[in-house]
Image (cartoon, rainbow, N blue to C red):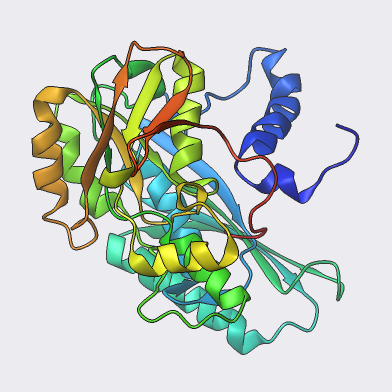
Length: 330
């Protein structure tokens, strides 16, 4: 890799490649991070950090301020940690309208307030016109872990059940529709904080692992789990909840819903014994009425890969996307 391309920001195969390269200096010194959505720290705390460059900054169902808080909160939530404190960094282009910036700050503050989250630290930089596109947000979140047993990929076992918390791809489809001036009735980003929906699950002993399906979508998360553990993940296309509006956008633009970004959807792996309880609990949340079992983890071949039973009864392998479907999705 001699230069960085937009594909390296896709969340797919090239993103994994660049992350491995960037972390090499830390790993060689034994100080590299684990590859989960948030880090579990000594003392019972968790933290995460994330950057947001979404275009357009306002989209159906949210804006960059709301997205920044939700993205950080969801990274903590899938590790079983409560969102308590936020650090917020802004890089602002010279000439950016102050009124628009304040709208995004109000949106971020309202989301924090709903969750009982405090803005604890921040930083602001202004750069010359043309150095960035408007404004970029970076968020860091910190909170207490609310579960004794850690949620992580190494917990995955054969026969575990795979569950999605809601229909997939709505954030990516909403951004794509806005960017290409497509009018799609009822299509909104799923951008939302998942902590209130996921917290009740933390008492279940059979809960193995959770992951926020952001860049690269559901397909990329499942591939990461399979490749990291060497297990085979088997899913069924007919069981995956996908809104008609998302399918419509994907059909028009030639996208696969499996790889469309989500900002309010998680995939969960759980022991078979508590799978139905997970579904029943999730469906009590207004965000998770479409929660569904989509497949299982197996000891089958090929190991380290994901297969999908298609709507017509065939079977195909699911791989990480290569290249960028839609840049600056989050």
